Length: 77
Image (tube, rainbow, N blue to C red; front, side):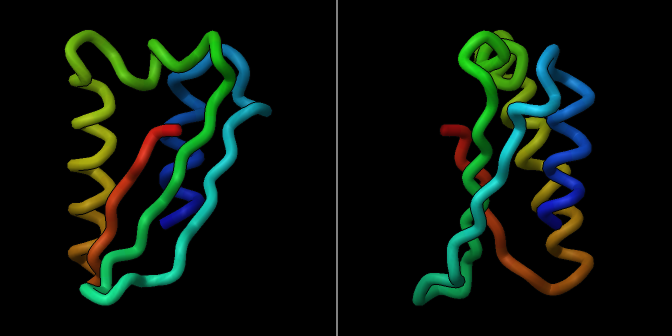
C-alpha cells in the first residue's frame, strides 16, 4: 500500500525525491493511517483545486485497501 501511494504521488509532483510516507500502527478501530509528505512547492499539486486530487488519491487508496481487507486513511502533511 505504501508503494502504491508513493508511485501515485511521484507522478504528480515536480520533486519526486521529496515524497515520503510514514505509516502508523492500526488504531483501536483497525484503521492504518498513512502520512504523506511532499515538498512545500508540490503541496498544491497533490491537493488540487478544492481538494479534488487529494480526494481522488484517498478513493484509490481505500479501494486498494478494500481488496486486501484493510482499513486505511491518508493524511497529507
